[in-house]
Length: 327
Image (cartoon, rainbow, N blue to C red; front, side):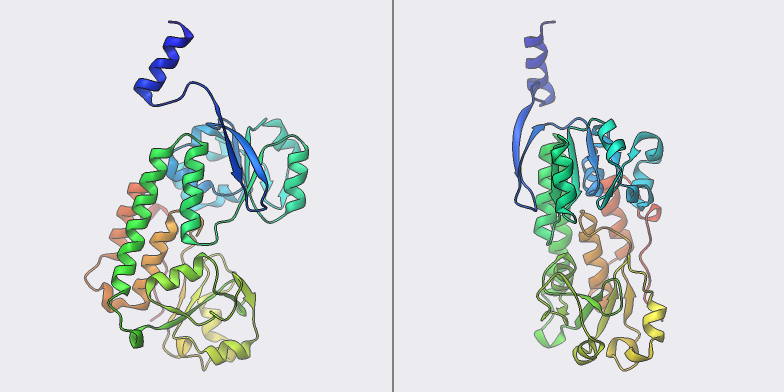
């Protein structure tokens, strides 16, 4: 069979272009990066949960050290330690291990511009990402679908995530303005909060919760205890990856007069990335903890389980669990 006939077969029957094409991407640093697609040897210092939804693990050769501890990666790629090389973290890359893999793409976070430039100077094709809203998460999903030649899988994941968010927003629309509760995310330390921008703020808005820290214009910010006491939120959400626990917040005497503490409305978020389609499932959990009466007819865990199975082929009970409210 000639090369031309093989190419025609791939295009007509598999929907795959037999030749690579160039894709220009403007990353979070404003760098215009040209990538030959579909990518065949990627290193993911972040966004590996996006690739999990695309089913594109056969195009990945290396991942961040953090990926090996990720519940979704452990569940969906049980042999990850054998298949992928540990290349460090987005701020501490093992450049020798990275170069040895000869990747055609490195995807990282926008934490260290100097490191990104250093990798690029080594001849590596590097894209720095950081989705800062639900829509940007979906845009990152579409981008990686294009990069990995998995556009249909990306479109399916986006449709399912948007459907989940629409369901939550639809329930929130039933609330009158005076019924909407005021909530706040504690991120990291107890005086670091999620402000007006960012995915965590999107989750509150979608769930029908007023962000008590909305006056903080950044994604996150450190504020004084006095400001938190003045905001006096009805609900407190502790970021899932925070070292602070619900018990510590409840036992901290400086928070004893907060309405959320007095009403035992302090919740620890699940340890799920907000830079992946799992953010939509997290929105459902946030909404159901804030307004249980709105979800009395919904099997929240069952709905999340179906969502995870549809996206990742992995049941919810194989992931980090949702944390039940304190009694």
